[in-house]
Length: 350
Image 1: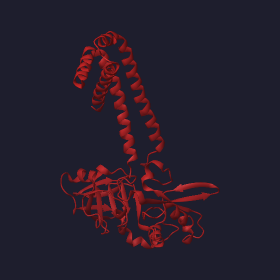
Image 2: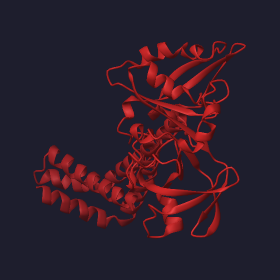
Image 3: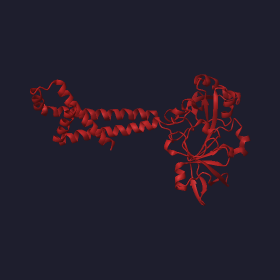
């Protein structure tokens, strides 16, 4: 019976070529638009979900109250990461990140080139974040002050098919070319993160300036990330952090707040935040658009099928005369609709 229904459905599709073409085209266009939109939505929702510590990974942000006007900033003090790690047992690890988007001169293969997209981080960076490395050991990649991790894009751009790990890149550092050894390559394929970079350099490079970085009042241009214990409560730690900054800067009125890393891309609109962030409102907006497009395509499909059904009344009558029951007719029209939909889905994917 199934084979018979499918055969009849294909015969009707072939017999009514123009009707079938219009119906399949309309449905496939609607499906294609919907699929593209939902692929974009899936991509937006996937940011920073690949980190193995994802549910317990937070960024520390600052809330400032100036004359009753409350603002939130993404940057905090340099000493904060170590202080939080030492003062709160529920914090398993911490790291700092400094984003540097200023162009820098590099010497690669005896050629001077200019690149941007640099970040500096502590050696504990890979203890918190799970950026995948194609080459190199994440445990030791940032242990040497003059080491550097590059992205897969940069490796392909300047080293072709060679493995650049162990090679030297000279970089302009305080108006002097310094040699940096490549210790790892980050895979761009799974790089859906609010932290976008092509070059990752350890903070140890600033060791001559550490005395200045220890100043709580002046060294406040850094992202601070913490990993908290699974059993610890975010709200409890937030309450402890509320007046924590006053222990080191008594005159400060700023409050510290934990922000989930997996919420940064879509839910964060802070001062000095990442320029690559999206907006959850766009996700909702395009979800509604995708739903309406698919709904319109379905309504169009139903209207055309209903209009065509009047011309098939003779066929229905003959089937009833020879003994067809209502359920048989329902199955026949149902299979035709399913085949139309499968064909439309096939063309929409193409």
